[in-house]
Image (cartoon, rainbow over all chains, first blue to last red; front, side, top):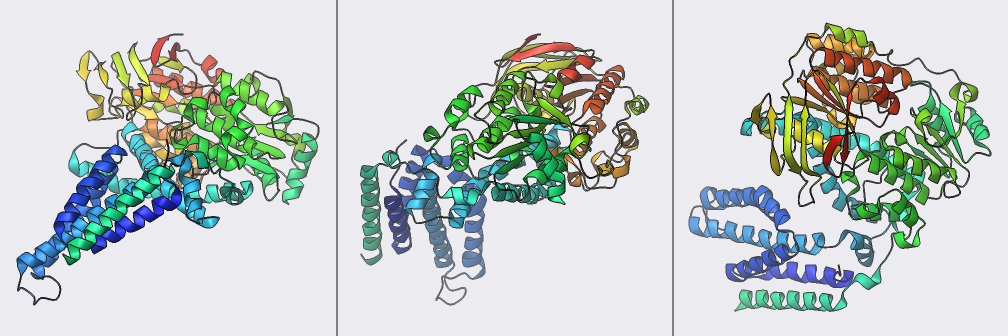
Length: 238
Length: 401
């Protein structure tokens, strides 16, 4: 599957993210969110975005609205309690910005095909230990999920997992310890293996496949992000 | 000290492409191989926990091999071997999602991709089915293996399809072996366990798959009678572990039904109540800080401590123990949960001949006590010792073997 060239991808993410901060009101942000969600669906990343939306952004947005709308009851710069609606609107705007920004970053980073991840990162100037850390960031999530699933499977297989929401919450706390112990053990074993195999030196040799990048796609992505940035600038100053 | 231990091994290996080291559990085989590789350039150690031999960085099999080879897969020498070990169709899969046998093959391929002088494989081939084992041994024996030869330990050496040069550990050890952390198993202790009355199980037209993947189980039907031992045969990746997950209720089938004692049930609503499942990888099934707590701490735990020879380590952290002992703890913990049916996935992994014989007795006693037992094992020795009904699993279906 062709992918946007590394530099075009980085430029697109940067310009689109800048547009999120520049946008002056909720309408362009809302439209941007819809476009981003559409692109996330096309990239097969909607599930990931919804997980982020409901587990991180949702609770954060709720907290922001509670603080600015019910506790401070005013936007920044206004006297406390003077404008509850303004405070709530301010919190909603921050949440909307975070949603668009989260979507842009997920779209920009998670749509990189795993095979093109090393050459993309290398195209961004990442190498050596930085490359290990960057690749690790991409690998650690799926691996933790996998290991957590294995632990849950093992607990269920012994009939230790209960039914109902309370039991599931209890299971979550019981999963943390084996997951933590596994992470430490695995890190120790793997560091030995990495040292023995000199993999750190090999990370920079991970193949670069130039032919699978799509320069025209990169130009389109940059053009779209510039268009979005201009809309954001206009919305701020119009 | 390291060189004192390792040098005789290097001398014994001289002139051999593949040398096997014979010896029972806790005879110092692992220490010998670890020390042989420790700090020595060009020597790669591959232990029984094959998942720890993978980088943890790659999100696909292809990337894992490319990381080790230091070049594109197509430009590496691994393509032919991938085909031979039946991994080519799995190139885009996450290495963590592979079956135990497939992971072991991948770990060997990655080791070879490093083009080492020596590869030391410590019981990592025990998870391979007969076909893959033969191919892997051939790979290590001919010119495609490490430049100066491989050294292996394996509890199934006498079952290997190819005869290889072997040496007893006593002949090459210079230092006396440390005392074993645990004694042998005492299967007769299991006779003190209470009798259970397992219901018959019937699976009808079961299909099951993992997220958006093709069905692993396809229209599987089987009837299982209590008080008997079943051995589920089949190559790596045939769906044996998936079958276990459906039976114990961890995985909800996409179609089909399951009857227990003639009653239609949905095991995924209360998993692990009828069928207990011992996973191949012991480490994911150890949750507690002591072995005793892991076994439940009740009267049955005392029986299991004796039967599995775990009393000396009853208060030790399970994860601090050697692999064969962790496997025993995990197995005992599953049996300790007293489900009427037990699905034991590779219970003999890492176990030597004496332990395998004892484990076969434990399985027989469990059946005598009324349990239904389903076993998956690539060990011929173990299978031969069981008075069992053999079932063949192939392409997601079960047939009498």
